[in-house]
Amino acid sequence: MSGVDHLQELLGLPAVDFRPDDPASALPAADAAAWRISVDPFEDEDGTWEERFDAFLEAVDAARVRALIVGQWGESYEADSAYPIGLALAAAGRLTSLEALFVGDITQEEAEISWIEQSDVTGLLNAFPRLLEFGVRGGQGLSFPPVRHERLRSLVLESGGLPAEVVRGVTESELPSLDHLDLWLGVSEYGGDTGIADLAPLLSGTRFPGLRHLGLRNSEIQNEIAAALAAAPVVARLDTLDLSNGTLGDEGAAALLEGQPLTHLEHLDLHHHFLSEEMERRVTDALEPYGVAVDVSHRLEPWDNRGAEGRYTAVAE
Image 1 (cartoon, rainbow, N blue to C red):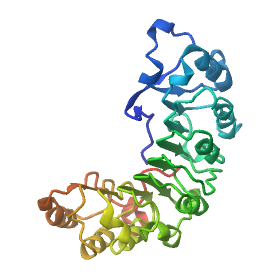
Image 2 (tube, rainbow, N blue to C red):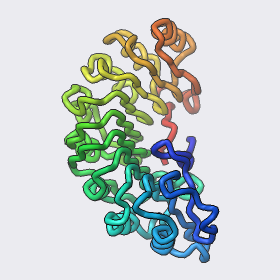
Image 3 (tube, helix red, strand yellow):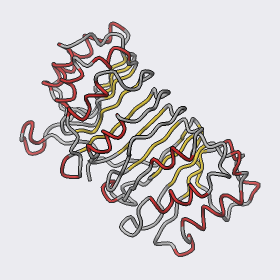
Image 4 (cartoon, rainbow, N blue to C red):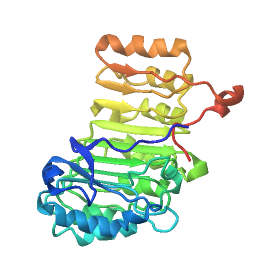
């Protein structure tokens, strides 16, 4: 299974690792970078995440910071994300221009995605009313009770197993400006117990009237999702539909093609899939003449020739 990489940008700003020993003259302007605060728990000279965050707040003009990335904050099994989240909340009065925030920018080399201990992340949405983009990596311990946020445009939850309770919290939230939603649903072995019924409010089109990008990705029930989307009202308003990184096979792709028209889409992303070559051609031949950019790259074979039971998601553990 492939891992996940560090963010390269956030809010269109390049990701920059803050290091306390960098001279002030070498630092970009506070509003010109997406600042990543991260420590290696096995390097004593790194100190604690709190010490590095405090140093960051002193080294830059905190009131101008637009994007913040919370990287590794310690050994994953010793402290959950409530630790860095609490420190960010305490600094909310200084980070008055914050428009983008990502919690858990941790790679596979640092910790498997299932080892990232999350917590209730919605306090950040309440504390930062200017946020336009919000993302979280890791589903273990993740809590997302319904929340209201007037400005949020993009919500990304990356997980090897996203709990149904989290998905329901998202769909019950009031996010009138949301236009980009990306959910990595994962597998049941790692807590991904979301079913089609949990997605129903989203698929019905009654939630998030401004939604233009929908990603329901990295799922072991990718075929069922595709079949549900074939008749889902939400699809008609989308520009981009992303069903990548999951276990999609010919049956799911056929359901999509036999359902409502998809020719209005700008982009259909199916990469990391288990389609036959014939089905790949059917999908592209049906949509590309209408200007739909179709990604059917990274065709895979099931493990051990086990058919549908041998299909796997891109990210699980």
